[in-house]
Length: 340
Image 1 (cartoon, rainbow, N blue to C red):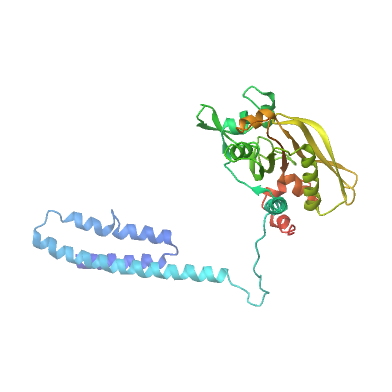
Image 2 (tube, rainbow, N blue to C red; image 1 turned 180 degrees about the horizontal axis):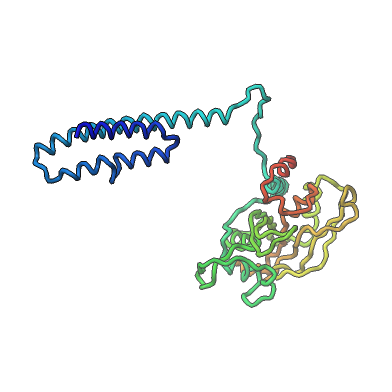
């Protein structure tokens, strides 16, 4: 028995010496001290022996097992050292090369535009408000004069959720920031002067559209505000935003269910690469009486205007960007070009 166990230990030593990787080490371990290993079979062979014989043989087998486990531990430690050495040698750093330096973060162009817009409107007395991106049908459509059968809804195809509002209609990702008109005006007394920047969602994607994009909504409700105020404020806003007096605006008649009259705001550059071109900037108009009523206000006493502008469109125009998708591809070569 003793000689046989010594032979097993010697064979194990030879096997461990020839091992080159962890997988081979596991196979050798299983062969000698695994569940069906050589030493394990010895225990099974004398299960019917008397207690003294079991004690004697068991001691010898355990000693052999301990020796094999020591061989196993030594080989495992050796392989780990080899792997570490290989890893270090394959990732050597050439200390003679110039340092890479630290890179500094940068504000995303869309957020830079949003901050700029907020600063401009705060300077003329507007508050900045924020709200949820998941909206009810009432806030997103019905309260803004677009009932459930209104054809204008098809212009804002959106993403619906498997959740219902209190009227049993599905919740949705807001298609514009206009629902903030309803939320704010329903809980605050006039005069109301606010802008609401934020994310919006529509099923649309190409060089100038994205399923997720940003808008800024403007709202002014009072007893004496007029369309002339809209024209004056928005004109001054664009001059500040683009830092130029060399632009012209036109208010082109249009249709929006929540304003009457409604207008598309186009801008012409009188200098630079866009000189002579009319570019659509925003939709705007006098707030529809039905919407004023849905605010909980009397349209006989209160009136106002609203506008909605795309932050991506304004950013593209300010920096001369031709493809909206660049904003969301996370290419630092593009993003690092815009720093002011």
